Amino acid sequence: MKQLKTVIFDVDGTLAETERDGHRIAFNRAFIDAGLDWQWNENLYGKLLAVTGGKERIRYFLNDFHSDFMYEGNIDDLVANLHAAKTKHYVALLESNAIALRPGVVRLINEIREAGLGVAIATTTTPENVTALIKSTLGEQALAWFDCIAAGDIVPAKKPAPDIFDYCLQQLGLSADECLVFEDSANGVLSSLAANIPTIVTLNNYTQDDDFSGAISVFDHLGEPDMPCSVLSGHAINTHYITVDVLKELHAQS
Ligand code: XBP
Ligand code: MG
Image (cartoon, rainbow, N blue to C red; front, side, top):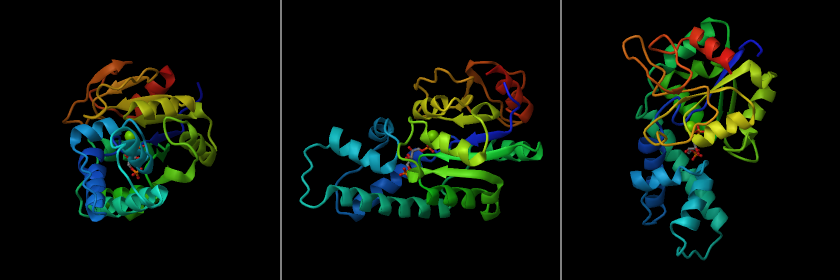
């Protein structure tokens, strides 16, 4: 196993709990704007999260949950316009500081950088959503901390396909075994493992029943000195929050 060089973070569910109170609200506001009576409640949204990508999720909803929907116009245009409106609502939510980063995220990113390691992002969401989240939580200067921000439609196939992680590795100029991924979902783990990158999970309320087979360890969160994290499966650690030394130890386990 090569030396750890860069930690690649997923965004939604990993850096922040963005789905239930962020993306879902934004989708519903876009549907209202369009005069549609679709409203995705928390339970339905949990089912729709089986499909990554907002545009792909709208199509999944239409095909599998609302197949009786009749539309005389071009359905591709409808999906694209709904998603553009949703993104505007989501960015506005982030700019209103509606979403905070998860426990340990700021601390660990700072520790990783202070240790001389790199940080990067590989996400299914749009670049504008990533920019808005980083700016609203860490400040605009933090965008430069990331050696690569690989997001959304930059690749042809979204998670669970490996494309976004393969693209990130190529942009970083690193091999998979020089990196470590933090993910929160089954689709994310399938994607990072298909790219052969050692992966650690911090799950959340929508993904606690997901299958994380192949991940080094599954945690409830990254932990803070005053907020212990727990190992739910996989390789255990001897501290109560995740540090750079823990990352190097887990990376060596993979
Ligand atoms: C999670 C996703 C995204 C968001 C919605 O991304 O699947 O599609 O749910 O964002 P990740 P968009 O966990 O890879 O960060 O509407 O911009 O797709
Ligand atoms: Mg995620």
